[in-house]
Length: 267
Image (spheres, rainbow, N blue to C red):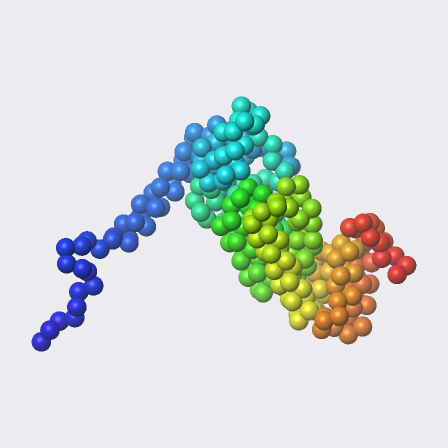
């Protein structure tokens, strides 16, 4: 009786998948140590915090960093590089450059000195999408966007944060790049906004009027222009009473303050 055919070709050694995984883990561990011990630049973040890292690691992963740090720019001769994103976004971005990993859980967020709730984490993920596009890291951009979609499905109030954060994404200097990366970013941002609106349309009460703040801020995460976009949407699954409750809750909280360049007082 013939035995089962061998999976290996004669004379060809099969790859050691387990060994490859161990080697990859060792490489990432070594890069983390190198980034910590051999850092030669500080990224000066928008919130004033410095993030120490390696010029070579950033340049190896990002064409933007490569041009900035090794090209004919002032940054190539400086050890302090100003960036327009906060440290809560820059630290995960540097981590991705080292490990190809994206921080997506509250426990791991804590290692970057970030202790916000799920809606705050969603805002950070939106910032990571923007920063990944700016520094031309499409893998990070897509992964962060995918995690945002998962968060919105699991926690509907997060959709309000995503709707608000993506409304200003294309206004950041350098975001509207006139190439395929720019087109991809606009499409990705549009898809995130569409997913956010779909969640708000079909799970309106959960998204906009959570039971209490422990479930999320809901409508309170929106600016005036954001809430106007929601309550004027013709496809939203909500009656006039629910929309009135949303508007009243928002006005009671902000009392006509300027939140997004538009006032709803008196409308």
